[in-house]
Length: 618
Image 1 (spheres, rainbow, N blue to C red):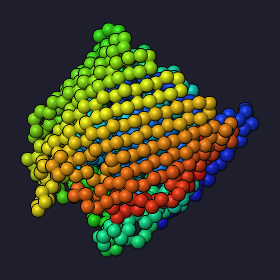
Image 2 (cartoon, rainbow, N blue to C red; image 1 turned 180 degrees about the horizontal axis):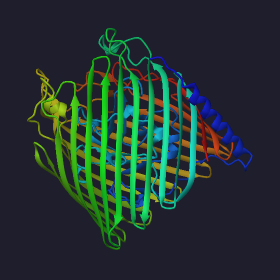
Image 3 (cartoon, rainbow, N blue to C red; image 1 turned 60 degrees about the vertical axis):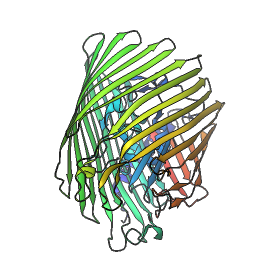
Image 4 (cartoon, rainbow, N blue to C red; image 1 turned 30 degrees about the horizontal axis):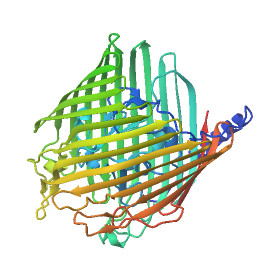
């Protein structure tokens, strides 16, 4: 796919950046970039772990937040790459950020992790999983990751956990702010973006847009076989928009609208006889939410959501999409100091379309759930139960229980147990020749224990978990018909740590995962048993330097463990220099040693890449 630059947009954006940079340079002293030195306090607000806003330091369970600054410093990296730098997350793609991509959360397969966009379900009902390649980090405010089965909070698909992609800030009062960036990198990669946000006089608003293009690299190699390998460059063109607007029409009453729309035209390889091969992918999510304090103790949250996933393969003329409408009424009732109960009523309507014309093209789920949360002195408890009534299946009931104890002001121990399930996709059930309408949902039981330490400039944590998944959906060896045959055991130990002194911060994690197919004793494909991560940052006045190291152990690309993917180590370097109080230059150099590796057999990774970005905030 030839790359065509939008010269007019580039010129306008460059001119705007130059004008703002000059104005800021003459209006005040130069300040260093946000250094990241010193460990940030856990005082941010998160919404995913308990379906209600709460302080990050008070959440129960294994939760991580990827903040806006981390996303900005990622350069041209994909959202999947950014996620893979977090504990217990691994990813694969088939030859570049624009190709088919999957995320393993605690070893669970991609379709077993629920993905939300601004709280709206975004998993694909046709094939499962999520279109990670369609996302651009430039239009995301933060990402909240909840590890461990969470179906008692969110229903189907949340076996490995939940990843909530949040595109806009909350509605608290704040001054008008604007940002813009423009960057160039290896493989003729070009990215630009701009946005603004603010809140005053009861109104809150946010808007951001981005575009990216790349000529790419050859996504495949001869190991992929004649029906996949083709010797050419595979690039992409990507566009994303996100926006929100809300109004607080009286104290305790707020109505808001969010919108997200991302699109990518993506090259891939499908052999010499299916060229050019490319796909069109679109991910959309929209919501209208009314939050109302009906009394001093009762908050009502009413939400209408719509998400749509679209995929069109121009090489094989395959088209499918998923339209999902959701209706949620959540009631948060404060029982007393430190106690809250939430009653959730939901309806989900799934309406897939496929070029193969499935026999069944609709499914409805009616759900009711109850969440209890208590913080009493050193004791923290969260309990949840949910029933999902699914067309064609009847009822699925799941539950969760988590307890944290503050042993000292710095040491906390916690335990949790929860269950999860995943309803079969429409392809599992109704795809011609291979579908099986008699499939049962996949089910899981997860237990975990944690110990954490946090004091001033030091944090440390140990988490051990086991998630047993039964009735996993696989294929018959002769007919390829979908059947409930597999059983998996996902168990592991994760170590995390971070220490800061002066202008220097050191951090790291170690994942020890045992992803086992219980039926065969084999290692589940594309998942490594060991992953180590180290990172360091140091600020030299207005210059901040950083280094990242990651080691990923060997994996297998097949269920029989015959096709081996070798382990690999990656070293990345980052730098940010403040030109003015509001303008900075960011440089990211990934894989500085140009290591050759693969996370899917027969497909290439990009090698050593450099991306330079000019960012402005005002």
